[in-house]
Image (cartoon, rainbow, N blue to C red; front, side):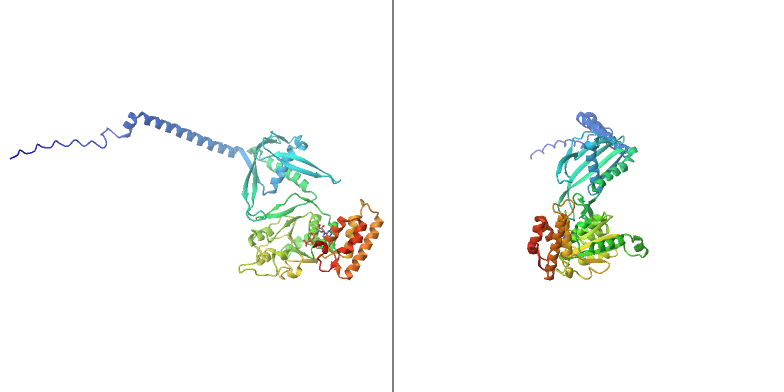
Length: 470
Ligand SMILES: Nc1ncnc2c1ncn2[C@@H]1O[C@H](COP(=O)(O)OP(=O)(O)OP(=O)(O)O)[C@@H](O)[C@H]1O
């Protein structure tokens, strides 16, 4: 019988997952591990720097908020263009002698090309270097100011620039809080300088989204007499507007909305738009040009625009028939333009529509307009501005060729003008007329004698469409 196998050796002791240390694990791990000590040290320094930096930022923000004051002007506000013009004026030779402002030499400049037309017809071009995008410093009435001009490109929503990317600019003025009272003074100076530039000018506004903004530079006012209407017509319209402008309280006392609508209708080239612009200039009013077919314009925006037209401005809706024919439904959900017909009617005299507003509408086709659009309350004064009458043709001729600077003797002008009127009367009896625009073009092209001799070729049968215009 075999001997039993020898006994197995005892299993090795199981090592402790964690060596028994007195207390916890970490201190001894750190005490024995220099690399870890270094890492902890660096962490501590990093944390201290971060805290110091945050503290400094916080303190400088507090200080900035308490000690400094900033004023932001963006390019949607009229003060923006006035301030830039003020800056340009101040940095130009004309005003640099001004004691109120001294500029630190700017390193970011941009150029504004200015064309100055002289009365004799010549013009001169000069370049104005203005502070461009960047940071500039100047001293105004003893206080240092920082100007930060920033430009970015944003895409416009709505308005004639809908979908376009246009530069979006802001200017931020910063000065010591104790000098904050200088901001209104500076803006008033900029405004006065800017208004000087608009003195005697007509500002045309167009819609930018739901806001009105000046479009281009202010234009020279057109003399009202230069637009020759049928004798007495201009006075009639002028008197009606004067009466309206003088009865604000009368309307208020009777709770009647202080609004008035005018409709000038007639063939193309009869002077409707020119007259409205000249009339606005004669009242020192601006023009707000509203295009109902403008992309992105909807009923709510239209209502906002009509309710928020700038003070002292006429709202002009040209060719109003083109936006709406007689409620022609072109699709199940609405009309051919983005503004609905009922939206226009409500904007013109609905409950939400604005107060103190003068609207001019023009059309070549009165017969196409919906009666709801031209009923009183929306159109309070309607006038036919027609093709040239013999009297108008004569007066336009005299305005072109007469006057102090005329090369033609006054008597000769008078004889020719009378001849033109007699010819026009004959033509009119035959049912032939001519537009004032065609007469204007004819007079521009010809000498007085030629103008009269060749005028008969301009007249066409009374369709209002002229051979010359085709
Ligand atoms: N009655 C007028 N007196 C002086 N100029 C005129 C007259 N009518 C038209 N003109 C000249 O003809 C041009 C076109 O005039 P305007 O645009 O005002 O006509 P309109 O009636 O508004 O035309 P449309 O109906 O096609 O818009 C302008 O250059 C303007 O100077």
